[in-house]
Each structure stands twice: as structure tokens, then as C-alpha cells.
Image 1: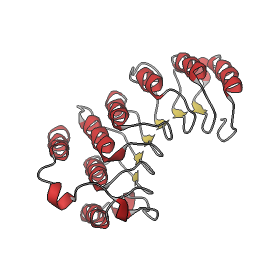
Image 2: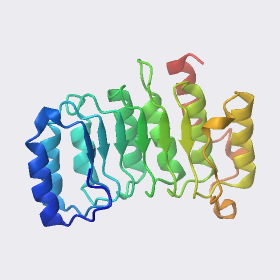
Image 3: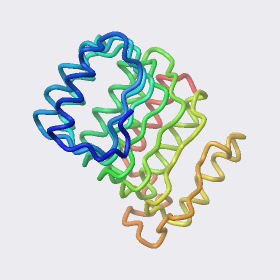
Length: 239
């Protein structure tokens, strides 16, 4: 574990090379808050293909190449036992969120996913939920965190619908976003009605006056992606 150690690129490269020699013995890798460059990313990608027993991969605020990491993880034979994935602070956008959603389908062992401090916006979170719902096998996902990711009411409602459709979900984190007050009340009502109000983390830093999404009460019927998500949840999860 090297979290918050502020490892520089040169040191990071040597560290990753050393860890790669551990191969199948390495189970948890936390490189958060390190400064890793393209060369470090290449070495990490090569190393991941040796970490056959790795369960936790924490890359929060590391500066690794997000495309290279998502691409290697899209192969379920790489780190096949992966259960915890943190891609916070890697400048993920909507299409990246969709790709991470597909990882949930390809990797049913995934239990916890952090996507904090990214640029997902509501569009990205809806895409994530749509991609993660397209499955034939049950999901084991327990936590999805998208704090500080420019999410408005549309994305928040999508994630709550996703969580309600997956009984395995124990926690949803959406703090420090921009979800309108009416939408916050809506998702709290949805959760309370399902008897699962305790899965939503606190929203103390939610900037409800900055939500730029169209009002959910007006857009609900005309929102094709949210409608597709609801239909997908019903067909794939037999709701």
C-alpha cells in the first residue's frame, strides 16, 4: 500500500516493476495519490496481467492513462478475482463511465466501484447504469460512489433506480453533486418506499441550486435513455 505517499513517476515506475515480480502473490494494490505517467501506466498494465489473485485495485488520483487501464480490465481473464475498483480523479467522462459499466457485466465479482471526482455528469451516470444493467448473471455489486462528479437529478435518479433493482447494493454515494431539491426528495421517497433508505449516503454538500438537468417531472416521459434504463432493468432483472 502506497496511498498518500506522493510517489513521483521515477519512483512509481520502480515500485510497479518490483510489485510485478510478486505476480500471483499480490492481493491488494493501492497507489492512490501518486504521480504516475505514461511509462508507469504501461508497466502497470503489464503487471496487471500477472496479478491473478488481485482483489483490490485503487488508482485514485494517480494520473494513470484511464483508457489503457479500462482497456486491460475489459478482459475478464486479467485480474479475474477483482472485487474492489477505485478510478476516482482520473478525468473520466460519460463514455468512460459506460465502459466501466460494461466492466460490471464482464466481472460479476466486482463489489465496490468508486468513480468520485470525475467529469461524469448525469449523462455518464445514466450510461454507466445502462451498460451495467445489460447482464444475464446476477450482480454482486454492493457500493457505487460517484461523489463530486457533476451529477444532476437525471443521473441521480438513474443510479437510484439501478440500486433498487440490485438487492446486493448496500451503499450509494452521491454527495457533492448538484441534484435539485425536488429530485433529492424524489429519490429519498423511492428508497423509503422500498424500505432501503439507509443505502444512500449523506448529501450534506449537495449544491441543489446548480442542477442544470431538465426537471425530472417534466422530462421523465421524454427521456429516452432513462426510459431505456427502466425497460432494461425490468427485462434483465425480472422486476
